[in-house]
Image (cartoon, rainbow, N blue to C red):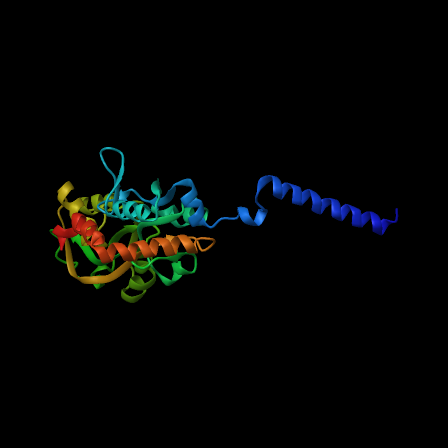
Length: 271
């Protein structure tokens, strides 16, 4: 047999084997590729990155169950696309990398939407807007606006949008002050309450329950520093269908009153 004829025979044999395999399995390699939405629906649950250390947005309750506004929103969104939710507690400093590495399917953990983050991730529409204010001790009289932070120690969450805001916008505009970073809000408020730092920035929804519960002697001063829109974050690869499904569920929640009910249950008293 000539070499060219042998090559033809081998090629035909390979195609026959591939055809037999497809017939036996009832599928092809292309047909086994699924979108993330299809994977989530097939497994029956969606994995959600969440800090679990940021009450009342998200925290582990006394029953060791993820609780809070973010948790309730995530559970309702999952229910509306026909699946359960599995929370993956993650420190904020590792949240973005955890998402990009595939440790969870999406983030519902007060992820502020910024242009920089849009380069790495995709977002739904905002699911909450937070006004950020300057927070100091109740006996503090010299810090009343951002300009008064010069020469002071200011605490902030590590890797947060507020940290970037202090470093990239506030400090260059008003002058030098020390930035002290924390992995959770509670520790920063403890340090502020005991005088280890002079100020922090956060929003009233985040700090009011903690201040009440812990008896911290703290207050907000001045006008809101800025307002932030938080969205649900996704990787940019193979997630569009899931993101659109979640975004549609969020739209429906806002339209039928479910969103307002969840919001009021956590923040109604602080409005």
